[in-house]
Image 1: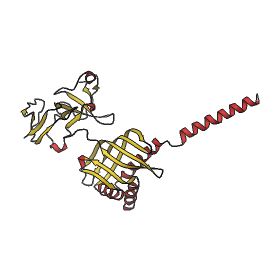
Image 2 (image 1 turned 45 degrees about the vertical axis):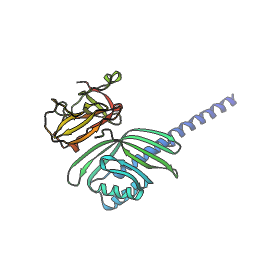
Image 3 (image 1 turned 90 degrees about the vertical axis):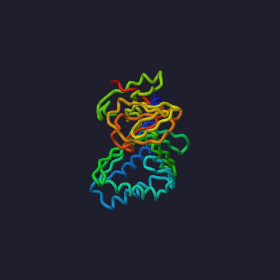
Image 4 (image 1 turned 90 degrees about the horizontal axis):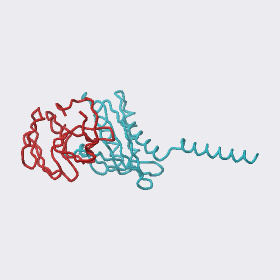
Length: 166
Length: 119
């Protein structure tokens, strides 16, 4: 009877352990989503943003990218390989055209085609107001490749999907 | 798609027609623009293998002018000829009063055509 009690206790502990690991240890998919969330936080801009916050955000955005990242956005005439530093500077310059900016990601579809490589297809919605007072509301489908480098998922390619090709 | 469909109006997408057949010329179709929820309503004006161009706001397909009775607002668009690739259709909205650069149109993969508006 005592033996059965010990076995039941062991089974219970193992079950609880599996549940804890499953729910509380972030999966690779959650880590990839987190990088996307950090990117959207980096892009976020409020009208009251000061220079210090702006510099911090530029730095944070750069840190999310691989040393070289392929960017492809035909509608913005953006195509090629950019360094982390160039992306950070480009992001800072692009943000300066807006007084208010918000980037949200939806409809995540994440696959891992190779070890330490994640391919993410998502919907990105950029809303805000330019410094000249124009409203911005753009939605696009993005395809991103993230690579796991030194235990961190970093963006190594971002492509704006061209659904309608003129 | 003004004036055929109004901006911000509500509609439903009927997916059945393209399960059994291909999009046809002049069909108004829902194009999956991003993810599974963001759709655009556009009209099919040319099919794969055809040549499309705009001359002074007039649409030409394979060199012949297309009379577009559904377009109410004149435009002055000019677009050099281009071929519609395999497994694609060329779609344009009915509202041509905006500059060409601001209008979403072009060839879309048939995989992106999800259905037709219900009404």
